[in-house]
Length: 165
Image 1: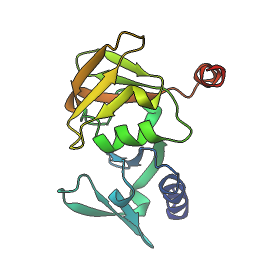
Image 2 (image 1 turned 45 degrees about the vertical axis):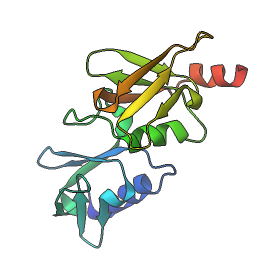
Image 3 (image 1 turned 135 degrees about the vertical axis):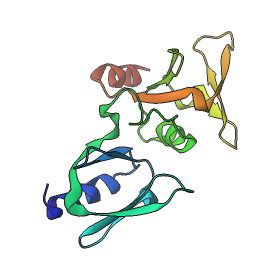
Image 4 (image 1 turned 180 degrees about the vertical axis):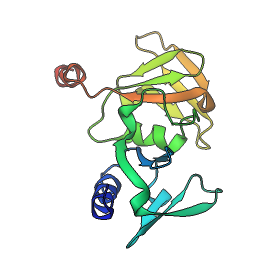
């Protein structure tokens, strides 16, 4: 990928509202996951990336970028198996228009969320509550660290269900 194309792609992905997670793939095979706008920045010929708020910032030449890919291209979550962050969950829940999504847990369980009111989180973000469909008030209290992937349903089927509701 040329430097000009890398800049164009990074601008396009960083400019999406709301920001959807994406990956920057480097020549050495590394996949950098971007989930927040301030996590990646670029200039004339270099880009800077910080993995977490406490992590170190590293700079690389833009010519090292092979591709920029949607974050939903992998069902298994982040490239290194890390848990989903509260920021990712809240962004998915508050997306406009809302799209149904499924939370996949490390133990293989999954929970489909068909409406933003069917999930809530503790203000500190460690615990989430999933309200199950039905009138009996069933719910599950989950540790967010168990959530390894958010699968957003962008199919025609989920759009038809929302329109008919």
